[in-house]
Image 1 (cartoon, helix red, strand yellow):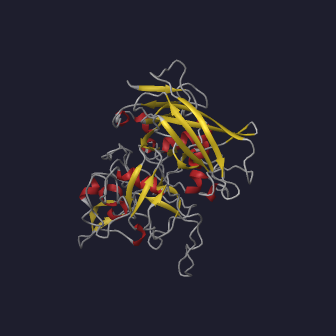
Image 2: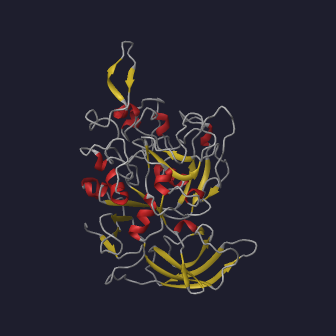
Image 3: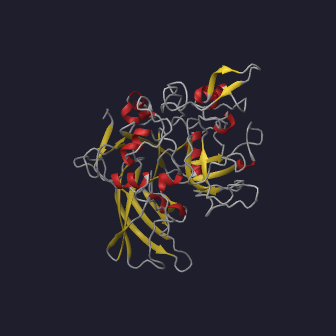
Length: 457
């Protein structure tokens, strides 16, 4: 690892032996209260004291029922925060249902233990190492965006690099004047109270192979595939086909055979998952309110020069032919995965274009990226805090719509294919039910990919 990196043993918040902080904080639980039978939610009040002045800490929480440990994944904490905390009193709100806790009713003899470590800025997972191996999970504490991964292909193949995204408030959706907007993009305020991590790159084909031992992508030529984003992967392939895995947001369960299931088992960390719809857009925007995350808007809904700087899409190599018809119209086609597929067409190697202000690449274009949420439109106009999306599938009943019975999930960011016009690559774009039939959770179309997230408690 490079200078300023600190390594930790297995477990997101387990300090490596010998690492000492200038001031070790102390944690004490002051109250645990479940408002049963009115609510299953558990309020956990605690105090953090003795840390460095102004320093931020992440707190891990282990829960026990009658002395037996129960799973408490980060996504199951629905209020307060356990990340980026300073000295003082804090509250976390835990939802047993989202943790997959099987028992119903009041939690008997429930208690927790707490641990705190300094908040890192980058999380790096070595996918070639197994559970418990030294150096499997490492962290960086750079004050700014660390871009050292851009000159080392290991970070797009054998290592996953995730950037910490700070909690904050933003305007989700698009303004009424934004070119290409749809009725699915109602602008509204979203408050995210917890930090989270998200991949600086889309998950690549080699990273998928290291977890799943297969090569599902359309562009799977050994000459190019390793650093290209994995595609032809469905939401179900990423999280699972079981009714429990597809029940999100009722719980955070995934199938052991899925990519997320394999990554959780490999690392022992249950915080890994897809990002929510709101997390994805917040991370993509990186503080911007424009159509693109470099502070510009598109000026052409199909082919746009501003977008061409930020990602591979339909008109800058994805599906653009060098040949033209007699009437001057551009020919669009899907490049073959074999000899006709090269560096300048189809998908692009991750990180080939400009990143946003948080160091995230390919948020515009390359592959459409799955999110956790069920799809529904239009979005609300009301302020939301830590939204998880609709509670169930939004079945469309019009008989003329072939795909109405499918469980639909949100896709973001646009892609390289003939569906990847400029307007579909905007920060606010969400697939339209009528123009994008490929949003069913079982769909493995050749422009569907994803970006991994890590949900802090």
